[in-house]
Amino acid sequence: MTEVVLYDFWRSSASYRVRIALNMAGIAFESLAVDLPTGIHRSDEHVARNPQGLVPALDIDGLRLTQSLAIIEYLDETRSAGFLPEDSPGRARVRALGHLIAMEIHPVCNVSVAADVVRISGKEGDAAEAVRVDWMQRYIRKGLVAFEKLLDHPGTGDFCHGARPGLADCCLVPQVYNARRWGADIGDLERVLDISGRCEAMDVFSRAHPDNFKPA
Image (cartoon, rainbow, N blue to C red; front, side):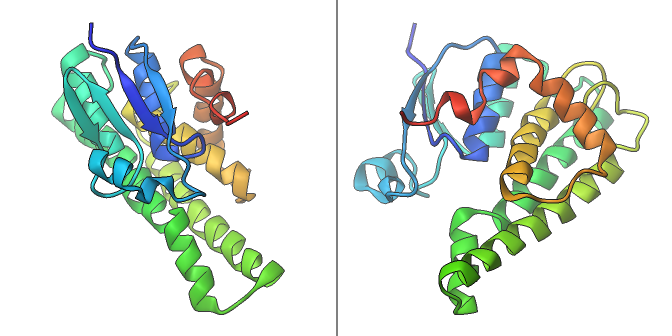
């Protein structure tokens, strides 16, 4: 059987999503770290894996896949993982929830974007870090407030959609992790916290947690 290799970074929320999905699909994988802070993702070796110089990249089935949601949908299609509902309206809803995080919150709060915001601000030292933190808190909360409102829907169950976790939950848990990391105010988002807490208690989610992939 072809070895499955995930090129990831421990704190990357996109990598975290894929680790969850691999665990949920019952796929054993080797994690090879791509250290973002030292710029290894911009190396010729990694750019050859992913021309965007991003993580994650996944080697599976003789393929090399990039983009976390595309990877999760590939796993769903090839492993019948159940990450998306069977009905078209349900699939559209789950994709919308996942896209809200992966395509709205995440790009704005990407490390490189936040670094540019700090650079444009002209601040230095503690003042620069305050700009970064304010940016992260502002846009993480804004996005998760919208996510909370979308959970006020008949399709919401114990998880983002129905009685089992899926693609949207794979996106939500890493975003809640980021919210806590940056101190974003999400204490009033009851559905978000209830669902993410239920997921976090599951082995497939806990094994994917960044602390388990943090460099020694």
